Amino acid sequence: MAINKSRPKKPSKLSVYLYIPNIIGYVRVLMNVYAFAICFTNKQLFCILYFISFVCDGIDGWAARKFNQVSTFGAVLDMITDRISTACLLVILSQVYRPGLTFVSLVALDIGSHWLQMYSTFLLGKASHKDVKDSTSWLFRAYYGNRMFMAYCCVACEVLYISLYLLAEKPTEHLMDVLLSLTKEISPFSILVGLSLFGWAIKQVVNVIQMKTAADICVLHDINKKESP
Image (tube, rainbow, N blue to C red):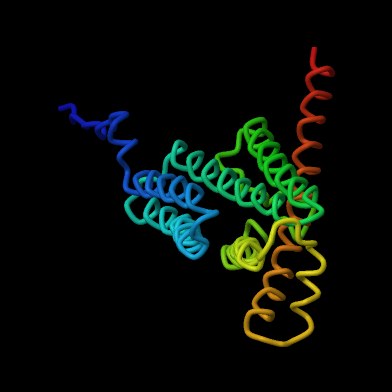
């Protein structure tokens, strides 16, 4: 007698859009839109909303695993929200600090390295851009392999950028003058900025490694295509 095995019900498109972590993602987008709308009129509220949105980046990942609602759409939404919000803040900093090219270059490095990493992941057929176990760089493996280490570097970046935003008292301030002024007196705020600088530096090195590694994968893919009959 044949046993009728019922297949699990296929989720609808709407149900995926309404996954709990994806709803958190939509809230993050709305918070960021409002935050940047008031960034020049209410610095304190901007920082609160921006940081809450950043914290929600970790909450939606937890919710996805907790409720078994991991989705490709959610992962892409998450990354796009991260990249755009950080890029917007860096653009603002480029307008209030000199040299502005410093912050514009950070935008290019952040977006370029992550875009290349996502594309190289697609070429390799991997499920996640965080799967770098086969990388020859121990720092790259440590960054994506240790959640706490990656969280520290990401938080350090955002805290540094928010701190610089709060420190900017007038347009066209020189970045080095502001950073050097923090070293003249030891305070909880200067220590926080110092700790953030260390994590920020690690993340920029990881971004460079990520860009180079992903570019190599793209080049090797082209070479293999030419060699195949």
